[in-house]
Length: 395
Image (cartoon, rainbow, N blue to C red; front, side):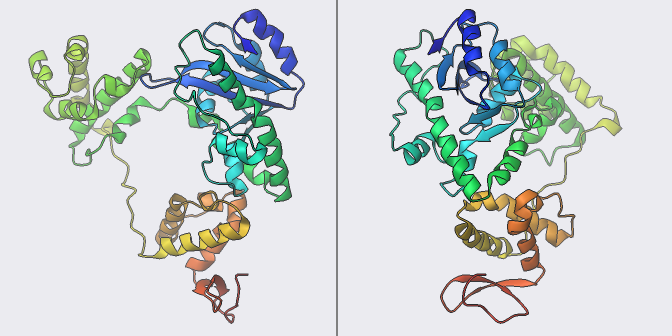
């Protein structure tokens, strides 16, 4: 079903109502724009599948009312970009969410598994992803494109049902719910503060405070302009020439135009603004000058992170879960760093929800010397109590 008019959308929504869940997917284009350009919204519920055209329909509110409803579970595969789009349409957030890619990793079916592979695993059907690079904003859409888009929600239903059964059997449904509540928090999709964007530019730690102040103003202007023009920030000015402007601080159009990599069209359009931002940065009161946060670079003791990573791999195989879901290298590094520096560990990822019992407490016992890792006589890696005899198998 392809919905292209307001009246068709208003006829569709009652057919979707009453279901405890709503399957969702989006098709979009974002190669050259700051924001996603939404080309299609696919939905499924109560045995109805539809592709809704947001380009030809002005008012999506009837559908958005269902998406906002906190009593309806929203089901996606690889939800991040879909949620980024839908959170712009639903500023109060989209909750609750079920992500089949995250669920598949939780039951040991592979990290970052593709939708096609997941569908084949559950249903045996092979999906042909022939329209992956379609221009979803070009009209008219072909029937082949529409069928392709509808398959993305049609086959999500059996995948969701199978994963829920497996999660319940493994007593991990609550684990996934805790993960997804955090990953779908609307704060993750808020527009970034333009005045912090300068921190993303490389090679700025040696800059003098007032040069850094100028760079902050320029980077904030570039980000705000990118939002307003709906283009990528690099299309306005790339990092390298932006950094050179902050360093050299040109005060006339000729000097500005001489900076390599700066488009002449941008010089004509924005020269006066750039000069005023340079002056603003240089005139910044001392107490308002930017201060870079301490570098997060910290080298833990050699071998410690690898030791815990080895334990995570064995633990993951025991639990039939993806090792990166149990604890990825970033989580391991943060824990070891916090332990070695004597920091409060309670806010770290491996001490949250189910991970604390599964790996967090055991990490602590290993680093504090209460437990150790050995290769036992059977050739297996074993976690042992340091005050007890060595066992033959992993507990």
